[in-house]
Length: 325
Image 1 (tube, rainbow, N blue to C red):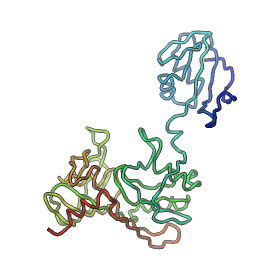
Image 2: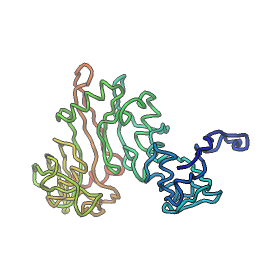
Image 3: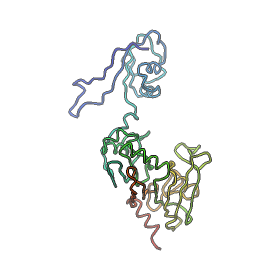
């Protein structure tokens, strides 16, 4: 292992500018001990920073955050030699930096001391994840409601896909989050969606098919045996020109549920490329909107119901399908 020379996490005057302090990260450094001669660099770093995973430390090496005798090293398998000086810059993981407040304009439909109902626009990611570690709904909730930092996922108890718009409920207290989570699991939260599909959907259609990850694609879900139970009720609103406007009622909340259930029956959503939908009626994102949300208030049990009309990018296409010929 290394013989530590202390921790350097301070900022001196040279690291400040008129815009404030620069991004500074903790550094750990030391001299390679004799018993670690000819060992891999990434294994050595685990002894210097055991609170980080080896894969994260390998990433720091690849990005140039590790120096050996003052020279940046980018190969994790590099063998270190006794007496060499190793410096490690502890850049935080993307995940650790994701849980931060970011001011944004949230369309809040309702709010009280226990919860809020948000009308999410298409294009907004709900939870931070690879490729979207910032600018998510969770970041906005943290900025709007400071106490959200004490709650799991900032109080967000369910989600919508990035390109699905519409209503979501967010708990603001631990009591409300716990109650809402249980209500969703018990299917006591009523959720309705408006969607537009390819094909002529029957007047009523119930799809009761289990859903699991598509074995051929990690970004897709599929209606396959061995998946989690899922049921969607679909009601035809109007149909014309080989397309349908439908209303969907969820009885479970699986990932991509409506998109998968409609696609597996031969009715992919308009503009939903992932599940076989093609652009139509001027749409450039999947034609799905969470229009109605109803539940008993988690504190007190008062019945609550909310509706969100179709947003501007979907409304004209819906009008085309539903207008009388």
